[in-house]
Length: 265
Image (cartoon, rainbow, N blue to C red; front, side, top):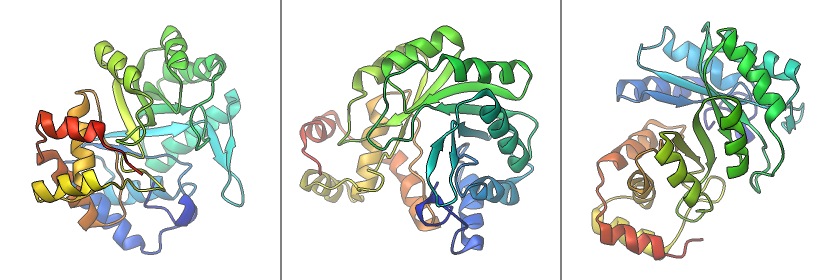
């Protein structure tokens, strides 16, 4: 998401730097990329193809559908069967693949969070595209627990991508339920998104571990549950390496309990 221009709209200021970030990520062992033809629009998928195609055999590229970008950069719902089929074909074409590894249906782009409502019609449309061999796996994004339950009755759901981090823990029960079902949980805005996480407890913990507050926040997520997959995102190689180094940061049970109790901004 951060490889497109400001507001996830238009091209990056430095195309060569964006391509370098993607190539370095793969060189360092990253095997899961989160993207969408909405980003730019089209920009991020075109960058991924230019940087990485033909793709490494173990690389999983997850994309999302359910919205289109307006001329001014707005995020507009696109839930009809025709909308979804067009979006799937756009992702296929720009990524340069015959089948999409994972397609997440994004039920809402409301920054305030998901809203209740049936997701049956769009999921049935996506299931038909899956039956036709255009999609391997289906996931959900920005959904409620009730929508996850509804979705699982219609299709196999392999992942749920919702807003979750140290300061935004509304999905605690859902994470535990999904873990028991073997379904991945992919927290977006793991570092706070447009309002970065800040707290004295996070700073103090980082100082004790010789790490950055962002690394501690990511390490807390990795320790939260075995089904969590992180997509912190970046537009720089230095930040990419910092993010990946958080995987080697081990928090004790006491550390995690301290962060669980912390008040974050």
